[in-house]
Length: 121
Image (cartoon, rainbow, N blue to C red; front, side, top):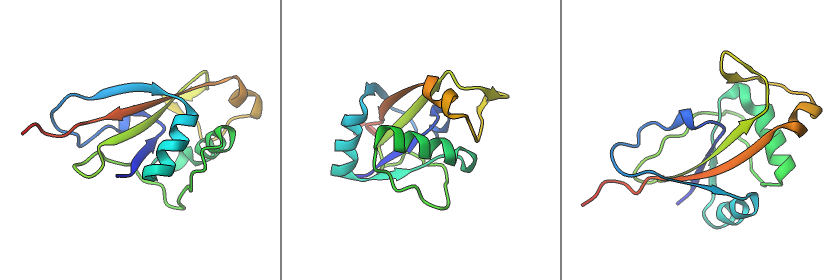
């Protein structure tokens, strides 16, 4: 089962009913998780540069596809990793496509694993 990686938890769509578990995790945990299960990288196209910076800074080893699209939780894909970014300028509530190295270095990045167990039987 691969995992989705998003830059925002506003992309949680298509999950239906059920209890969602959210847990803060480390970048080392993510590296092990991605190595074991794989990952589908997901972000808005305008967030590509920021995702590349996060990937390089935390050495996540992600292969970022040319065509970025939004990931949806489903029966097959029940885990999602969200990167919460704090301390970066925003426009109308959205992250900008580009930041200076200084801005990036002053920002805080929190990784959260979100698990949707699926429908109860």
